[in-house]
Amino acid sequence: MDRNDKRFLSLLWLVVPVALAVLVCCVTAGYSIYRRAVERAYHETSWGGGNDLPF
Image 1 (cartoon, helix red, strand yellow):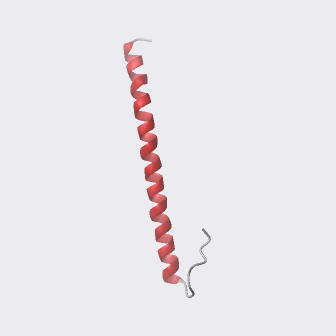
Image 2 (spheres, one colour):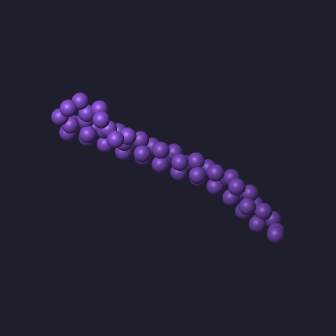
Image 3 (cartoon, one colour):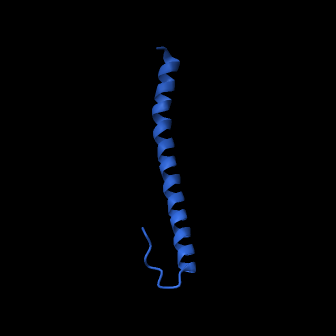
C-alpha cells in the first residue's frame, strides 16, 4: 500500500460520514415536508375536526 492509497483511505473516512449526515438530513427534511403537506391536505378536505390522523 503506497502513500496514495493511504491518502485515499483517509479521505474516504472523512467524506463518507459527512455524506451520510447530509443524506440523513435530506431524508428527515423531506419526510417532514411530506408529512406537513399530507396533514394540510387532510385538514382541508375533512368535514369533521380532522384530528383522527393515522400517524
